[in-house]
Each structure stands twice: as structure tokens, then as C-alpha cells.
Length: 91
Image 1 (cartoon, rainbow, N blue to C red):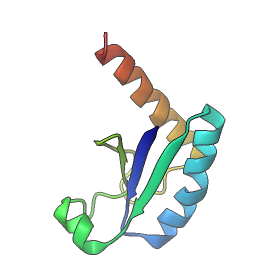
Image 2: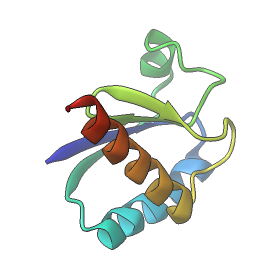
Image 3: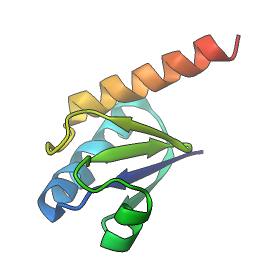
Image 4: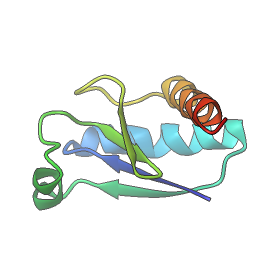
């Protein structure tokens, strides 16, 4: 099972992505544990302030558009990209 951590300092963006990410996972038939991190000390420790949202998938960080919530379509594209990268690298 995948682990996806969404790092963001904006509650509004997190609220949007709490809808779009599960929908994208459902469309793709992926089961994942989702964690939402918005605590300033954690964001600071990870050096993510001002560069969120950051999406961590199985320990690797990905970004779409800084300062903008990731839509369902964008999450699907990201998840497809990650899957393609992993299949190319594992050969």
C-alpha cells in the first residue's frame, strides 16, 4: 500500500485536496494511506515553507504548482507519472 503525505501550510488548499486526492485514487484503483501535514515546525524542519503544496509519495517529493491546490485531474496525472517513472527505473 502506498503512503502519500500532503504537506501544505494552507488549510483552504488542504480542504480542497482532501476531496481531490481520494477521488483520484478511487478513479485509478489505488489504495493508499494519506497523511496531511500542516504543522509549521514540521514544514520548517522539512524546508517546505513557501514551496507548498508538496506531495510525498513513498518517500519521494513531487510538486505541481506552488500555492495552488492540486485538482483530481492533476493528481491522476501525477500518479500516472510516478507509476511510469517507477516502471522505467525498475527495469
